[in-house]
Image (cartoon, rainbow, N blue to C red):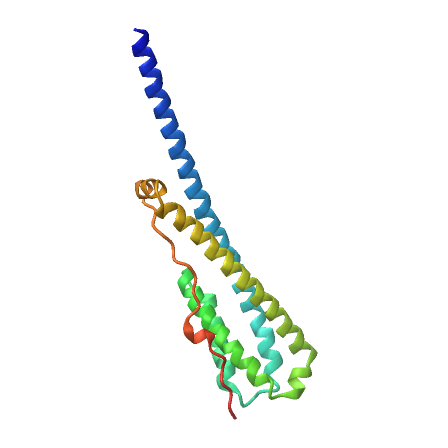
Length: 187
């Protein structure tokens, strides 16, 4: 009788340990998923801030650059795409489009000495630069969070629990090659 009780307690202890281990992995996966969601929310906040700065920048620049309609329209179109994006991928695509348009705008602005010296323009350019830095940091944090999540669900024993929970790897944010190029401005 005592032997059966001891075996029963050992089996019960093993089951409890397995359950604790499972709950530990489950909670870990959920924490990493929440970090990813939080990191994306931070990116979204910075993209919104950036989009809100654009109209002020555009009004400042318009008076100086009447014949640069194409550049101004590209910035406006890119801002509109950010405001109407529904998914993280759409937001990042629109953001990359806006980054290219702003690079071109600032490159063109170099040809207007009065604009470069305009206090409003300098202040807006500085705010956009700070926002760009925050976006870069937020992207890095997002990718770090995705890396941690992907590592936990792709390695043993986490992959077993991830499969049981139906969790799939997440994609990291990447900058397209076209966004890495310096814009060419010619007159």
